[in-house]
Image 1 (cartoon, rainbow, N blue to C red):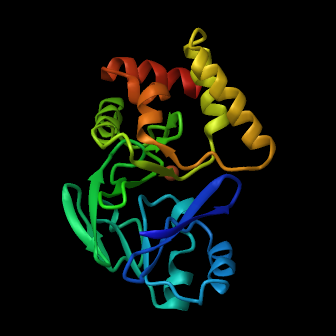
Image 2 (cartoon, protein in one colour):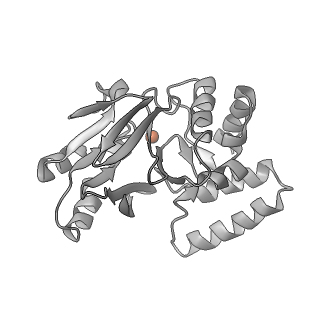
Length: 239
Ligand SMILES: [Fe+2]
């Protein structure tokens, strides 16, 4: 894939644009149509495929407008087919699809929503993690159990270190503040807090991160057991 671009939307969402090597234009999680429309004006007014990780409005509200305007196909989780309107292709976990010429591995990651999926592109080493894995954090557990969310994160933990991680929100500063609260003696983490603070002061994104980075610093990905995960998640909910 090429030309991966973050399109900031709503208050703290990231929509992602990319092109497959054979020329398909793809958008991930368009929570709002207008920033995508503005972006596509500069890109030749072409959109072939929309990917959705889960049904929340801030990931899907732009779907129907963009489908209609550009004739794009909407691909999303089969598990949420009754909650996402206009889906053209239903995707299942543990299945490898083709998008353009490229393999797209779908990973079912219930917890934030029960049908949430993540998109892993092994040839490009790119993960679109939606609201399952954030940089230094994870999504709130709205529809699944703590056990499910822990096991979903552990599925992502198996991906290679060099995987670029694109997530659905710019929550990294709040996440690193929580992580340093949990691990006050981790000096490397404290340095990360400073560098993330600087990036955000300049309005720069902290996304993408890498899976190696998340494996080293993300307290939710590092939680070995569902109990450990659950304690961290509940502490973050009240942080
Ligand atoms: Fe969400």
